[in-house]
Image (cartoon, rainbow, N blue to C red; front, side, top):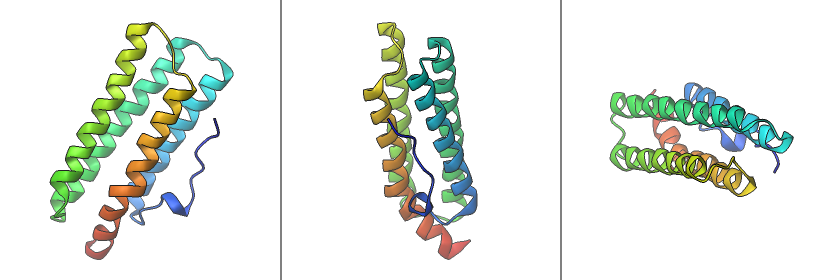
Length: 133
């Protein structure tokens, strides 16, 4: 699977959110290359843990901005965050239960999980914040 390439398409035009997104893309790419290179299951699990932890932190960051600037879509956006984290943790638990590591299908899920959120609801949030910050 190819790495995610950060470009203007993924930007929400809010520098602090874009910085977070770049970090998440970097972690996804580390995970992707680790799977491709056959790194140890423990290492891949550690990268997955870091990706989820950074995503949780990032989502709280966005939620703080939504509160500060009274984003009208905050409830739905936060619900999507909760769904995304739950699905990533469910994937992680499934991998642990099955005693297997991340494979291509899992990477595709995670890529869609990450870029889909950025290109969807985060773009809307970014447009709102650009008008108010």
